[in-house]
Image (cartoon, rainbow, N blue to C red):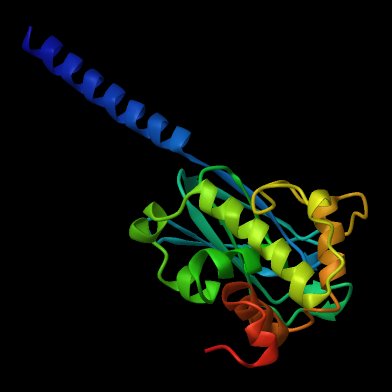
Length: 220
């Protein structure tokens, strides 16, 4: 009888461990994304930081796409840098955000939306991203930031981007870099001349946050 009880205890314990492991597998899923500036950022270095502050690393392939496995559910920030755009070295550090899905883009448009959402450089938000900052974010705030970016570009940068043609939720809608039929990619193509390097990206980000006074150098 004692041996049978010990056997059942071991069996129950083993099943419990297996159940916890299975539960963890359900919560940890693949994250897919695209790094692009109109053209794909081939070979870009990708870092993803989850709400626990843990970092995971990947490299974008020739089409700018990347995948990370075993990423827990919840908000994520991504950083993409380096790589080549049509054979030319990329000099921009870009960021993206996903609040609950499993797709995240890393483009000049997502960078500008994060400037607006965070009220400052997304790089700083990425470095300190964790559970506290994740709780302060919402899908509604991200949607408002995206709309504000389109308005700022049209008003102050002279960028020919049709707001109606750009998909909503561009931060986590699947993107095909280099595909003229993809509305997000077409908007990135329109941005390429206005945002050619990190300096012009930061300038545009400041303008999105603070307004046209940045361009006129007369902000109070």
